[in-house]
Length: 403
Ligand SMILES: *[C@@H]1O[C@H](CO)[C@@H](O)[C@H](O)[C@H]1NC(C)=O
Ligand SMILES: *[C@@H]1O[C@H](CO)[C@@H](O)[C@H](O)[C@H]1NC(C)=O
Ligand SMILES: *[C@@H]1O[C@H](CO)[C@@H](O)[C@H](O)[C@H]1NC(C)=O
Ligand SMILES: *[C@@H]1O[C@H](CO)[C@@H](O)[C@H](O)[C@H]1NC(C)=O
Ligand SMILES: *[C@@H]1O[C@H](CO)[C@@H](O)[C@H](O)[C@H]1NC(C)=O
Ligand SMILES: *[C@@H]1O[C@H](CO)[C@@H](O)[C@H](O)[C@H]1NC(C)=O
Ligand SMILES: *[C@@H]1O[C@H](CO)[C@@H](O)[C@H](O)[C@H]1NC(C)=O
Image (tube, rainbow, N blue to C red; front, top):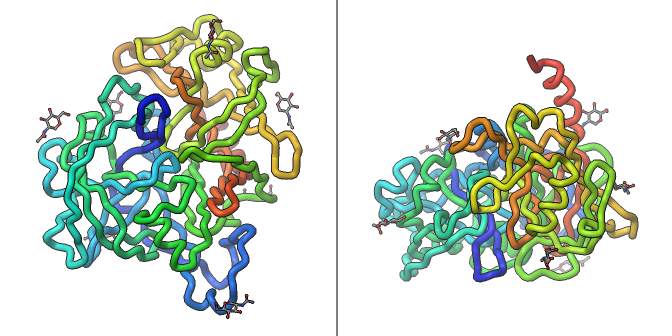
């Protein structure tokens, strides 16, 4: 998710639930491969190795968010978090949070010998929320007190990192099956879990395998790519600069193989693992939907669009986002037609919401990311993509089982 900062949207994400993960350290057989990183062999002995964290899918008719386990404190207390490329900070509920956090696990500072109270209170308002529900003013907001403690993820231990303890939250967060959010923004910021791991020798990269619910096996890999999860090689796209978001320059968008002057223009697109679908500026959104069906219309006042559910299944709606690979070739990232439908609106169950919301910022989220294995390379300032072949294979069996 993106934190909402004045006009510039910042990413930030969600919060989570159940305990998932126990870490799998890379086995002797090399399946976790770090890319473009020279590790000094005398350092290697002490450096942290790559680690996998299994992820669960928060699925409610459509894939909403992916989350996995971490621990905080000594002895460790378990939490689940969304691993959010759209933010930097770690947020988990605290025992100070009352009824508003009743569905989430709460961190008890009095039970941690490594806990440090930093003091101060802050709030964070998100520019995109959890799942596909629209942002309406301040309806996605967390209130925190600031602390430091030891955090571990995938068995890798990060001592003394900043933890924002949630003391109140808007009701929009209550149904979430995860407790908190852990940021994985595109820079090494001091006080973050990722920076602490990198300072202990972990290569400054992580990978996400965000699969559809029917496929499973979703995974975060810290410090490497898990080469058992894709075939072929990764195609990298450089991030020329960053204002704090993972963002890549695109030269244009095509809809079902066709483009228009509105769509064929350069834009910078934020890549956010904490956003479940897509957001684009209003003119672009309108131009894309006009090429899919005139019956796709705005729904409500908060950027959502929809169409009668009875009409949606048959619509071709393939989006190709064109980028330039590091080797200088045009490279498309594709959202297939089946992502068009993100499910019925709660306030209008016969109308199905469609995959793009109009917002002042362009964001690619889960609807595209789940069709690729992706490696987020902080030191190389680039993101690599490989087709999610497992998905294609399983999809054919899923499709043949549909009623
Ligand atoms: C914490 O999670 C781990 C790994 O899933 C599990 O083995 C352990 O029992 C959990 N601890 C508690 C107190 O729930
Ligand atoms: C590896 O690091 C050690 C300690 O910093 C240094 O002495 C050694 O020369 C380095 N080796 C290489 C091959 O860079
Ligand atoms: C928590 O936030 C809600 C608004 O989301 C507010 O109405 C309530 O008073 C707050 N509770 C506390 C204890 O601050
Ligand atoms: C799932 O969606 C239904 C229908 O929109 C809603 O009533 C329910 O609260 C949702 N459940 C969760 C856990 O989000
Ligand atoms: C990207 O997609 C567009 C529209 O479908 C197509 O014309 C173009 O050939 C594709 N480019 C590559 C490199 O696949
Ligand atoms: C959107 O389109 C309108 C009407 O064509 C135009 O006036 C406006 O400048 C456009 N906005 C952007 C951000 O391109
Ligand atoms: C790689 O390709 C082979 C042959 O098409 C397929 O059986 C296998 O499942 C693929 N593996 C992954 C991880 O995509």
